[in-house]
Length: 155
Image 1 (cartoon, rainbow, N blue to C red):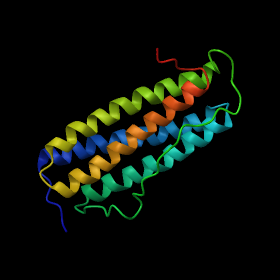
Image 2: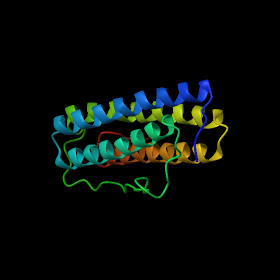
Image 3: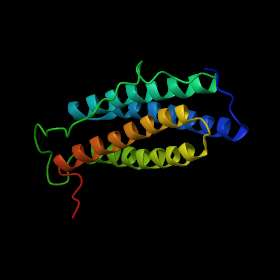
């Protein structure tokens, strides 16, 4: 099925495309900077998922609705188990990386929420909703990592 995007839909997808590119860059860079191996692995996994998101956005921009079955497998990230506590406040450098990515995921998830309501094609809405759900799972995974390592204390 060929997609005929409105000007507004194209603009929204181009925004999401830029967001996904930034997420890939941040997760990749932060995976290299992270001191904890578990956090490195988490960031590398999320970078790969963000690449899948970007691939889906690029498909839609080229006029195709991505198949939800290929490359769109839902990967639920369970709460990471802390292998060792890194101190009461956790590793400060890793905590800063996590804080930045948590803020980024909150922002990106919100932009998907807006985009979903602007699309006329329900298949596109489903793809965007799936991506948004994964963005929220990334945020949850980061939150769980932070909480289990003493970096985040929800009161």
